[in-house]
Image (cartoon, rainbow, N blue to C red; front, side, top):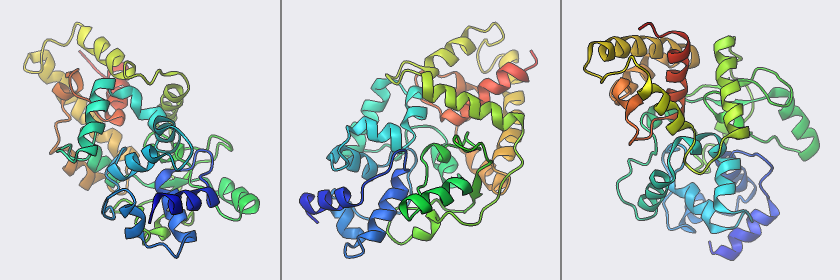
Length: 304
């Protein structure tokens, strides 16, 4: 499929405000049934993706960079791939290097943050039932909201309702065959607590106020952690005590956030460096969820 055909398609079936990009691609391919998924991705010199590959997969980078959505690349990423939340957690240099490696097909592990593969795999797709019904009445189809797909968001920003969560052992892929994964039917409404509401408050504050030039949350949080008197290195007595308390708290937090996949998720995350050394290493980006959970632990639970 050439670029003109792609532009005609995206102009006819335009992306809605705040629509989650993978769900939009699935909708695009569903309406443009004459286009095979492999032809669509061949427009970007790619094969059909097999996994969702975290926050910023190569197909999404190329799609955003192509200009067919009529928006600058970073605006597309911020609005339709949750970039307004996660970009402050990576320095500009780290993000630029990651993007370059993606375009050059060099080894990135396809993810920007530690722990991203496991957390992406087990993240449920989430939707608001009232938004769905209103959108069907207005547009004839529902929109899957990008903000709702964050692991730290649990309620609808418009209605305040607890989101329905569709759980799966494999992340939905925008391959034209997984349209059912994006259907806003079924799922569970979790009993959310002050813990969930705290994480959502933090996330909304980041998206509203945080500078996304790569000098935001990561540097601020870690500077506070490192300058705190208790931390004298991961191998110090205080560091070992902190590490044990942190991992215990992290396991409890993740069990609350991922109640249906908690054991397998914890097993996979343990193979990634998620201990205190990773939280304190200012040179390496850590998944935003892990850093927010560490902040929660540090503020409310740590006993020196």
